[in-house]
Image (cartoon, rainbow, N blue to C red; front, side, top):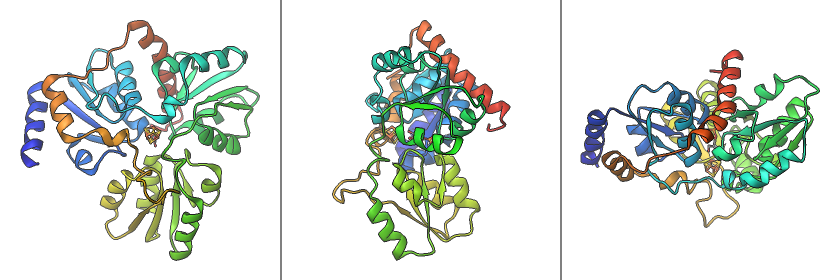
Length: 313
Ligand code: 13P
Ligand code: SF4
């Protein structure tokens, strides 16, 4: 293992590459990455990267976003089949037709979408800035939001905006069992439930804190509680435990006890060996045509611009 890490580091130096990893990656990958963050932080880091190569240890839409924001760099995705069930729940043709059928709406899309969906979008958002971006729009603005129905409903419950919401979801966040979470809360009465807004409403209703992966991590560092039940992908527990070794973090259990459903099967396709191989071969590379890059880039840049104005980044 040490030898593999050594070779990755050598290749990185030789090729002037940066490795960016999402919080849902395996701990060994988070440990060798130059930067670990949530979707928004990864987008910002990729945009500002000065290295020749960006290795995105995450899923396809993250690497695509990195390429759109920094098109002169070579962006490598170690596991080319690392998709996203949420992005898959929103085919671009159907989304485009839905947008067309509802003129006069501002289209807000979650970053967990393909470039083709972003091309139909006015402003992209992530779970770190979705509420604030929507709340910053005029109160009477009609909004189309896609693709995550849980995040959409959560934003609507807070902002009370006029929102049409696409009926998509992520298989990981839909898999948690409310019943088992409530059992755990009984077992650990002093614990707090931390939940990502991609979780369904019944889970969010019993959560003590709701936020993006970065927000949940920050909360767990500052909060005084000793035990947390964490309702998001299990990869985040690595940074939580690292930052607060004296605290206990329990992954929220899925409905099906026989599956590791709180692991994202796409995120977990990335391995150290694949990172090594993609650096060595400089492939698989994300390639986008210029027109798509321009169309999908506009709403992503708007997100960055608004996030900066709101001092969220
Ligand atoms: P954040 O990184 O925005 O918290 O999103 C979670 C997610 O589902 C990434 O795929
Ligand atoms: Fe997509 Fe869900 Fe995996 Fe995130 S956790 S990458 S939303 S499938």
